[in-house]
Length: 73
Length: 292
Image (cartoon, rainbow over all chains, first blue to last red):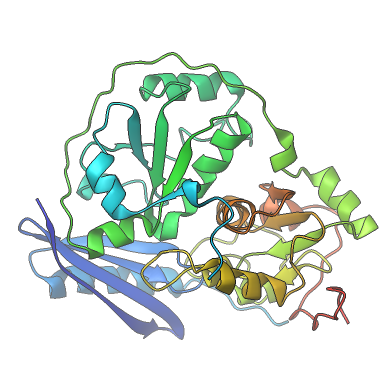
């Protein structure tokens, strides 16, 4: 199988930049949400469409990022 | 344009496509997200899980020599095998694996430039088949602890100001605004950085497509922070994987002689009773590379 329909876009969730990477392998769309800095994975999801996979990844990322505390420096 | 100091430490995705199934080549995927491999991987590649196969799972440490030999042997890797490592997050844990392989004396180990992301973005073939390589015989050397910094060495280096200290975490982790990467659990008691460290996030070494920046660009990025190879370097992050990425850049792409990965990193220093911690942004660099 080949990887098809690879795409990346950047969004913001709760003030944090998030990178969404999605692609299709066979009939399944895969999506990965990373925090831009440092670039660690927040969520990896699948769906029948890109939109479905992205929606799930965004929901999971939002949940995790909502728990991040900012401390005064 | 200057060449990398050790261009042989990198291979392209094209090279991997042509050589992944050569009898003396073993391609290994090492991801932060250990489930990524199952989605689809470079055909012929095996996978190592960083959290179970590339560390001692009882005490906090890298693999013992015996554990390392067992991993290599069961992966079908002999002492003369060409090992190509790649992974997600621009090769974070691929670099971690390479660092351990170098500690145990493996000669021919390389990184696939651009990692998993580049392979996927180029629309290449992927497979879900998991190869079962025939066991090999492996004899490790070392460990070569000149590639690794332990806590007492970092403390001594700080006291003597003998090393360039490079913090490769995000700027917000460096200042102490956050205690872990956004979205990840906090794993330290205090935020900030080791006094006098320079903030050079690991990602500065990478292009958008995941490949490494040119040697000329890298020299400017690190040199502008006073890290030019004129004195030994200690790189650290949170748990030692991002810093192994920077360790690889400094050691193999820029050719610095003495570069140590402090794998205890902030989860050690930021939890240590009485350890000095600096908060806030780094001060400007003077011409001598020291803080103003």
